[in-house]
Image 1 (tube, each protein chain N blue to C red):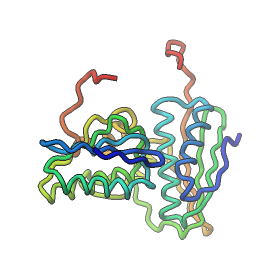
Image 2: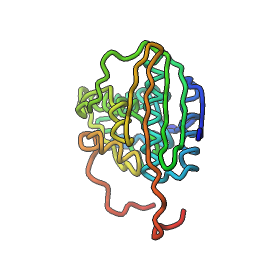
Image 3: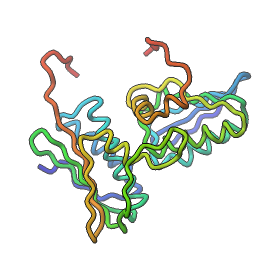
Image 4: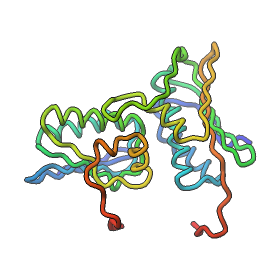
Length: 133
Length: 115
């Protein structure tokens, strides 16, 4: 089931993040898991704006209890994707590291037309003992 | 005291005799990173100690982390101590997981900070 299908443009960065928060939240993702997923998606969107030609598409899907957000761009592609954490003194290049650290899985696909990056999150049903929100 | 309104975030700068406190409020992402850099550089130029209060900050991304790291280095080059104080919630977790809190954070917050 498609929850969200949006064009990525730089001026929509914040609006997209809020839309993903609302849609993933409505699907049942909560608290830390929701915040982590939203930041992971945000980092992928940021990458499209900075390195992926500045425009692309975002697709948020729900399949059972799994949320998948797929971000596609039409940029030149990444020759070497290095997903590592820089030392605290270094500037730069934490985006993809954060995306994979905060999501269930980060998958990057290269094709001649561009790059597709996906992150997933699993919705866990609320425990009976959990306080209502 | 200076107050400025941004679209998703605000900052406040309190200049005190023993240092400057820059308070950040709201959500800062890539779009606000350049402006944040200018705010921090201005504070660093005017003080020997800058505390960046994150208590009311609810979102940061990797671009903002880069800005904080660069500001810390810029401050150190000028013998200014820049410290991140009072991070909470998601901001705190992101700073912790990237190792930034350990390097740029000050003394740990009290166990029961006022709400």
